[in-house]
Structures are given as structure tokens and as C-alpha cells.
Amino acid sequence: MTPAVRRLVVLTATLALFASGCGGKSAQTHVTVVLFHVTGSTYKGNVRGQYLTDFAKILRGPASGGVLVGDVIDDNPLAHSSYPINASFDRFNPMGENKLDYERRIRQQRDEVMKAAEALVRKPPSGRLGHNIIDSMQLAESAFATFHGDHELLVVFSDMIEQSKRYDFTGENLTAARIDQIINQERSAGRVPDLRGVDVCVVGAGASPTGGLATERLLAIRQFWLAYFQATGAHLPKERYSSALLKCP
Image (cartoon, rainbow, N blue to C red; front, side, top):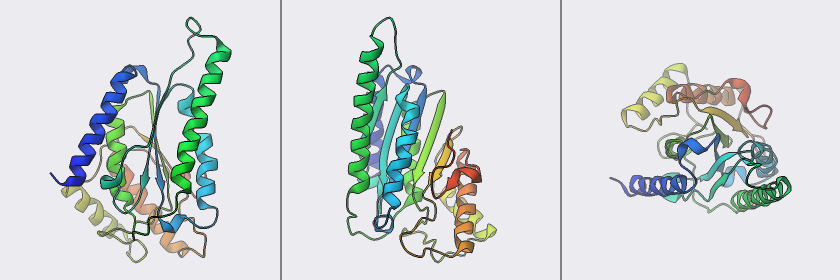
């Protein structure tokens, strides 16, 4: 077991303890996992500002009853993960709490989550090169394996341009055959996560503070991710793959 995988197992166990402490899987309605791409390619301009604007919209779902888990996408997400956002929002119980007190408590909790997200998003990049979006999906798999809800949602705040030791989408010729080859390689290595039944939204796709990549390459990258998430069992229609949040269930 590699150190990165061992760390992921420990983090999953930590999440499991959190889940048992807030009533277990059956107690949740919404389970939302958010991943923020925080390397240098997303730092300049208003890319991360847009992340926060759209995250505030996403937060409305779990804040009405459910769990929100968040982490970062960087050069080695399996090694650096700590699930710094990990919040459970209970539903209003009219038999146990005054409505105004409940709303005040949830509002305070929501504000704390927003501050935690802002701390992640506004943090300057580490200077380490590259970002591994594909590996970060294993963080999502661990979170969804820990918590279960009536609605499971993964929101990826990223330009989706993989630049890792295995693949560099700025130079890859992502033909249909190459896309199949990459997915098969990941599957053979046991790196395709189980995200069956999860709805996916991508926010920030192709976003760049400078000129960005050519349209043809961005469309090829989109096609890769549509095929990749299909292979995981998740649901990502192309209308939910965008530079900004247009529609997310």
C-alpha cells in the first residue's frame, strides 16, 4: 500500500467516524462533495472569485439538510487531502427547536463553511507544478462511500485541463481512441472510482485568466470528461459542464 493510498484509507475512516457521530448514513438527505482546483493555472484573474460565487449557490442544497464535504485538487491530491470542509446540516425539527433559532444556527454554520471555502480558494498556489484532476476523483469516491443520501452531487471547480505525471491535456491528442485508451489504463490500474448514481457539475471548465486553449482542444477535453464520468457510473450531461454555474441539480 503506497503512502498516498494509506493516507486516503485513514481519511476515509475519519469521515466514517464523522458520519456515525451525526446519525449515520440514513440520517442524511443531500450529500454534496466539492473539489476546488487550487494550482497556479486558476489563481490569476477572477477564476477563483467565480468559484466562490457559484459555491454559495451550491451550498443552499446541503444547508437545507445534509452533508457537505470539500477538498482541493493539486499536484498530488491523494497525499495532500484532509477534507478541510466537512459539515453536517440537520433539518428543522419543529418539535425540538424554535424556527428562528434553527435559521440563525444554520446561517452561522453556512457562513463558517463559506469562510473555510474562501480560505482554500484564496490561498496562493504552492509553486509545485501540475495538477492531478483524475486522482482527485478518488477523494469523491471515499466521501460518497462514507455518506449516503437521497441525492448525491459532485461539483468540480476546475479548468479540467489535466496536467499530471501521467497525462498532460495541453498536448494530448484526445481522439476517441485515445480517450478510450486513457480510461482503460485507469481502469486496469484500479483508479476509476465508483461514482454510480452521482450527479456531476463542472464549474470553471476551460476558464483562463489569459488566452486559454484553442476551442477544438477544449471541446476534446470536455469529451474526455464526459466519457470518463460515464465510466465511473456518474451522470454528467454536457449542459452541466461549463465555465460558470448555469444549472446544477
